[in-house]
Amino acid sequence: MAMVRLHLPPPFSSKPPPNPNPSPLSSSEILTSTSDAGLLFREKLLYLQRDLHIDASRALAANPALRSAPLPSLRAASDALLSHGFLPDDAARVLSHHPSLLTSDPEDPLIAALRFLRGPVGIPLSHLRRTVLRCPRLLVTSVPNQLQPTLYFLRRFGFVGSHRITSQTALLLVSSVEKTLIPKLDFIQSLGFSYKETQKMVLRSPGLLTFSIENNFKPKWDFLVNEMGRDLKELKEFPQYFAFSLEGRIKPRQQMLVESGLSMPLADMLKLSDGAFREQLIDLRIASLDTRL
Image 1 (cartoon, rainbow, N blue to C red):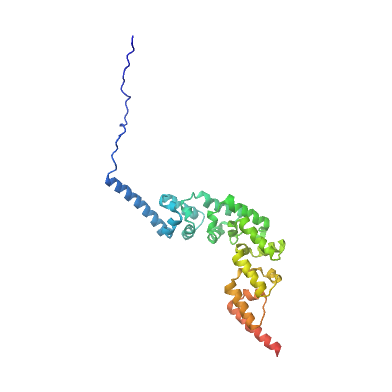
Image 2 (image 1 turned 60 degrees about the vertical axis):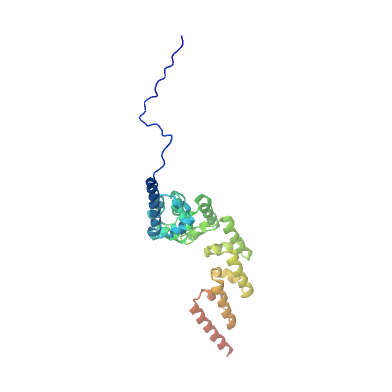
């Protein structure tokens, strides 16, 4: 006997069957969607310009992700800074320098960097603002890949105790050990400094590690030796020489000394203000005339 197949109706469903030919959005719906997107974008622009005082066009050019990022995510970076004691103007300054922070997860790198500065580096909370405003780049630099290795290197070199990293020297942490710090230390030693002398010199004037070899160290060293006729001994006594402008101070004052036929210790020549330097020149001229008489 042949079996009879029963054709049962499909199970009941409360959902309507899919429409194989969905109708396109009406022009009013498209207009509403477009106007909503435009309104949200305008709100972001107003937030950047009015609240953060950031040039919106420059920020968008530097970080195109701002166009699609929701407004709450943009506020997260500023809120994170404010929660760590920064003022609204501070947040605006930092975020204008690095608009990438506006679309980054605040936990990394911003908060990770702040925690690193407070913890391993040991920057007091009262100095945290000053540290970051001096070098906002700290907040966009990887802690494990950059800040931490550089901190360990600097501490091994001697930045501990009274020479520990502070709000003034924390900017050294964004420097590459292999590409920046070691080449500068090697160059200083190539001038005739021993390792101990280099160490003493740098710990005394940490800003030396922020100077360019090609644009600072080399031309100033050449001028010191070849034009001024000075020697390494004077440089060891006054390593701050490299911190003064070659064109703005060193050369003009050297020219005045040469024209007057006078000499002056390197430190006195450069540390004096313009007025005090001219007064010193006058005193030296009078003294030289007295000795002749």
